[in-house]
Image (cartoon, rainbow, N blue to C red):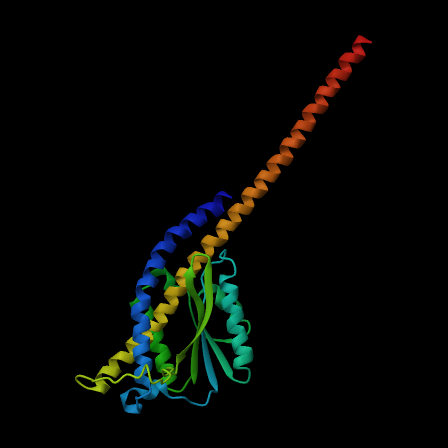
Amino acid sequence: MKITSAMKMVSAAKLKKAQDAIVQMRPYSNKLTELLQNLSATLDADDGGVYTQQREIKKVLIVAITSNRGLCGGFNSSVIKEATRIAKSKYADKDVSVLTIGKKGNDMLSKSFNVYKFESHLFDDLTFENAAPFAEDLMEQFANGNFDQIDIVYNRFKNAATQIVTEEQYLPIVAAEETDETGADYIFEPNKAEIVKGLIPKSLKMQLYKAIRDSYASEHGARMTAMHKATDNATELRDELLLVYNKARQASITNEILEIVGGAEALKS
């Protein structure tokens, strides 16, 4: 009970920082993604449309984001199950590989799938600069045709008690649905190619970093909730055992008193 209570407090302290980071980051990331999706419909190969090309899907990469440690309820198992489900149903007849971020996901998924890459040290110093090389590698692999589609599976942070398992198509970029109300016309300065050339990599790096940040906040929320429940269960068990102990102790004392009284009565008679 003491251990789980201490772990709950540690996760609660870490959760506050992680939650603030993802909440502050989401509006920027979402707007950047929205802008990129609106532009992607007008891109050609010279402008960077290589990242929007819809190819015949033969090779698929699933990026599964989990944690390095356990004791966080169903946090890791939910991602592992969703990644497995996607691979065996959505891409049943495709060549599926996985990129695992987090030891727990790698331990399970490596038994069933080919692991393209495994990373466990990213959470030691989670910054945009450290996450960016992974996004660059994914973009390079897609552009070179090594993978025809890349999906991300992770836990999206809602609150401390709720994490939503999310699947996102990372590459190719999904174009925004065209509607009469949301159509946008952009004026590019200095020119479209130069702006898009810088915007696409930045947006894709931010999308991956946001997913990792979401997962990191979700991990601490899930662990705090799990340790809270474990502490409550341990407290309940302690109280039950204390009651059993007191009953047994009282019964022992009562028996000793009865023996003493019985012996005294025997001496009198």
